[in-house]
Amino acid sequence: MLIWEYLAPLIMGVVLILTVGGVLILRPIAKHLGALLEAMTRERLDPGRNQEMTHVREMLETMNQRLQLMEERQEFTDRLLERGDAPPALGPSEKWRRTDD
Image: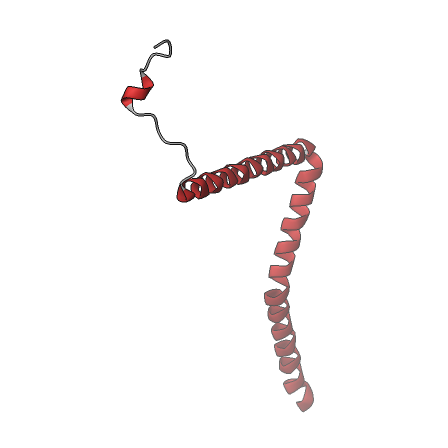
């Protein structure tokens, strides 16, 4: 009878520690798994959202391409201006000169 007096609280303590440890370790995993399953369910129920995301992605890629083209043109213009190859600006007298003189 003496062994059962010490063995029962020991077993209860071990079970309590294992339960608390299991909850602390498995809760975040279960939480993330639940979020993943919810996202997959939402995607299956709303296929239009996936098409919208594809459309937005295509628009962003197009805007990125256009921005890169503008940057290239700006760099080209800056290099021309640095070299001094730009045509001289027309002065006020040259703008209004008549061609039939």
